[in-house]
Image (tube, rainbow, N blue to C red; front, side, top):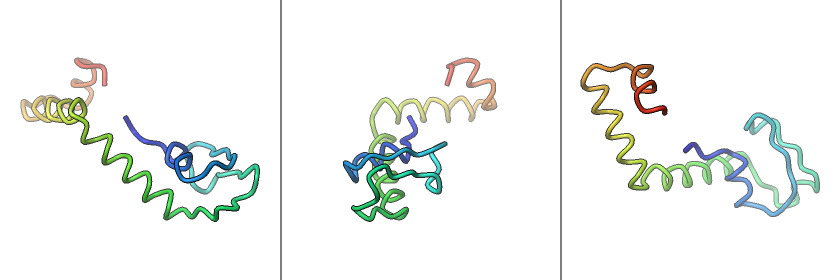
Length: 85
């Protein structure tokens, strides 16, 4: 699962915001950015959360399985057709 910037931002502040198209240049702060959250902080949190997500056993196994199918010569479209990912 891909961790969105919105998920990351929710963990950094309790302020109300809308982020359009998961684009850091399209954040609307409804209460103002009084916590002074920076893009760098959001990116760091997203990287941290994505690392945690990617290291979960089910995701490690999925990545390993996909790589094994690629090693057998299947391309991404063929793998997606087989496993629906």
